[in-house]
Image 1 (cartoon, each protein chain N blue to C red):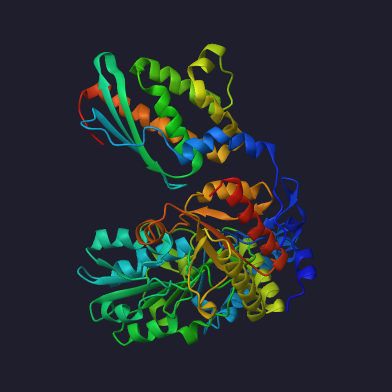
Image 2: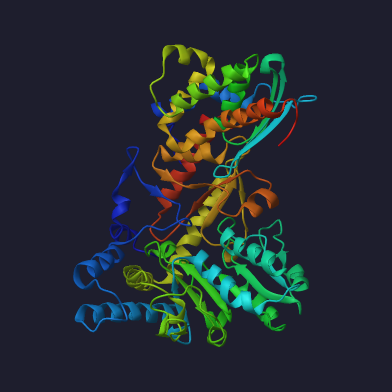
Length: 409
Length: 160
């Protein structure tokens, strides 16, 4: 059991009111709120030791470099990565995946090969591959999503084979909440020497990830969905692959020796980190990880699971609500998307906002899934995190019921 | 579980009964035979879609309007209300009307004369309290103008 009173006290934003009502923030799959500890890590950096990393001999620069590299170490341990050299700082998941597509994939995939993705990808793990497929004449293939919200693993195993150049999978769907069996699919893909890229943006804030156990080759995530600030994210790459990768952006920081007409690259991971990085962001992400570790990721996961089960069962009692996503809660995260036939999600969202409840409405950056697969214009989505309470879920369900009456849906 | 009815004036202003009525029973929701022009608009942020067909006659007068779409109550009611207003208007009159509607949505000063032109569509004025929804209300109007502008250029032809 989480100590919700103590946790909620750590998040200053949860004290605010919206429309005269206490804020009920259940749009965590879009971004999470930040605890004091994270906010303080940012201000402490700017107040106490703000300076550039990896280049000064003065005290401040050494302190900043030290904290910045300790943050990398922290992320590495959090993922159980074999070495912190495998942790590359980026801005967010989207940048991480673009980095892979513009470097490794650009030079390692050949015309005619397949990139296998799933039908539930976020645009971040779809659009970069559409571009590369066009540039290099590759085929995109999609593992289907079944009616129960789970991937069709049997079909997956017919799509992945000797002609596959890369398997890219979202770990947890930001629309359905489905947690995909990465380990099983990675094992299958590796039997054909197919590297596996995991979009962990939705999973890593809520569950323990071990990159060695999953045995993925690339793993990407953002800091801001896991209590960290925006503008900092991580790409993990298996060491053997990293050694063969060309740089992404070129310029300062990523070089060893530069002449007027040539340059040589810095060691990994700095080779992939051109320009002054988001130093405060990296340091604050480390304090977010500390916060999550203190509470315990598995406790957080359990808490969200009980909120999700409760929300789904309460929404089921409202006859006009069709909630989507797996009914097996052991393979589902804290995401509840739903459709109400005569009540558009934006009208619901506007209504709920008036009573202080923040949900997400729209296609959730997964247009092919929402529009083409589920046949919906948009959905409404509630997504939970460690600070959400059962009472908040009750308020949300009551609000939905009230909106249904208001709009006579 | 208690289920209180929440009362809020801004919300009631946004979702007036006439708006919800047009949302539930949209007027002129049909496809036309041999339309002079077809215009499609969508709002990717919301997933609102509108498909407008017009029959444009002599003097660039709109003789018939058909609008089908899907999306939120504001976008669909706006399309329905607009369809009743624009039939019988000339292209020139339309550009004044659309500008007046846009001004109303953006909360600009609007003359009594222009306000008159907007007739029932004035009920959408409450949308301006909700900046993220203004785009929903404007979608059919912008799409209509796009269609009409094409009539002016290469009438009478149906194109996307």
